[in-house]
Structure formats: C-alpha cells, structure tokens
Length: 304
Image 1: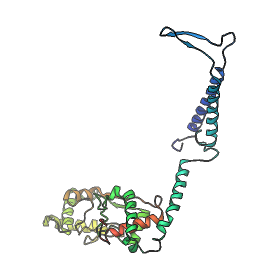
Image 2 (image 1 turned 90 degrees about the vertical axis):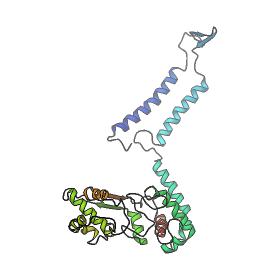
Image 3 (image 1 turned 180 degrees about the horizontal axis):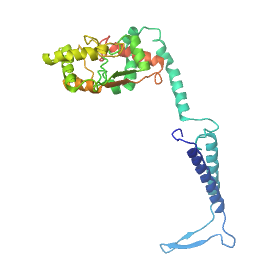
Image 4 (image 1 turned 120 degrees about the vertical axis):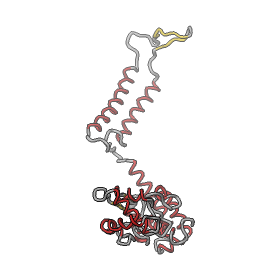
C-alpha cells in the first residue's frame, strides 16, 4: 500500500474485499431453499447420455455451514491481519516485522560465535582460520557481486587482494568503507579540455607508469595535467587517499590504461559508488568482514 499516492486505492480495495464477502453470504442464503410451490427435486430439463439429468436441488446443510464458516474466517482474518487496504490489523502484523524478529533471533544465536573475536585485534582475527572462513562467507554473500569471488575486482571495481588502495588499507579505514560506503567521483572535463588536449594528457599519464607513450604529446599533456589533474592526483600522479584519487604512476588501473580509456575518463569522468552496509550488517559482522578484507593483502592473499 505504500506504493499508492492517495488513500483512495486503500478504501477501494477494502470496499471490494468486504462487498465480495457480503455478496457471497447473500448468495448462500438466497439459494438455501427451493421457491414455494416447487418439489424437493427440481428438474432443469437438461439430459445427457440418455438418462443423465441435471437437477436443481437445495444445497446440502454441511456445505452451507462450511461456506458460511469460510466467510466468517475471512472477516476474522481481515480484522486481525493486514488485507483491507492500508489497515494494519488488530495484531499489527507485518512481513517486515516478522523478518526483523527472525533476524534478531538469528543474531542472538550467533552472538557467541562472534563474541570471542571482539576482544582480538584485527590482525589476530585475520590470522584465525575459523574467523577467515566466516569472513569469506560474508564476503561471498555481500561483496563478491562487485569485487569477484576471489576479491580481485573487475573493471571499475577495485582489486582487494593487492596492496593498492584508493582510500587506505588499514583496518579502521576498511571498516569505515564497509560501514559508510564511498562515493568516488572523477569529474568530466569535456567543457574545459578538447579531445586533442585529452589525448596528450593521456599520453603523459601513461608515461607516469612507464607505459609506451609519445614523448612529444606527453610533453604537451604535462602542462594540462598539472593545471587540471594535479589538484586531486598530485603533481607526480601519486594520488590522494583522502580524496579517493587513484595513483596514476603504478601499474594498477581501475578502468584500463589504453589512451582511449584514459581520454574517456578525462572527458566524461567516472562515478564510483560503494554502498554502505551499516543497515545490512551488524557491527560484529562488519568487523569480521574487515578482518577478512585486510587479511587478503596482509596474510597471504585471497587464496587463504
């Protein structure tokens, strides 16, 4: 009912439901006995296969009572539970509330599993085989869709199993990233930089990481980089973890290292979104997931 824009539809559905039940009761009682002057067995005149006749007899009492009890049950159900438009019912039941109750019960049952890790430092948790197994299952459920089951990422999704970090790879930063999420934006410069300048800048960016580049074009692109890109990526292209600006002088590329891909990033920008999980995961689970992600690049990689 929350999808409706007005109360009209709520009243409409409630009215249809109640009218339908009342009509069924009326129909039942209107057909419970034969009209006066007719015999108990009324022949409709329809005959099949020579001697199979269709009769119009009164409904059996057991069937009438069963039908009436079904209507009474429907009215009782609609009184106790949601069903009449936006009416919540006397019991106030909702599927969201039931889900929350089941989740609370499950979290209470799992409390003892996580309790022993709450007093341990993240490196200790990451080194514990059982904790690593729990963290891996959490990762596969909540993170693998973007970062891959091996945590090595994909185009636009960072590799979590190496030592390159957009915002920092210490345990507290990882925990904050999982809890609050991240919004990393590379602004488009199509309005201030033309395609030729973008191509020259891409050549300069490639040269920063030792990739093949045209030295003449890279020289022209250096000035554009320093006046436009250095504010976030730094004068030497080392990046800025406080802003989530990637390091452009190493061999790690989030979207690709070809000139065309870099030019597209310069002209059109990028908008990277890491969703917050504080409403999805409990603090204990976030801590286990933090330890697992931290351990991917500090205790032997994703294979553990």
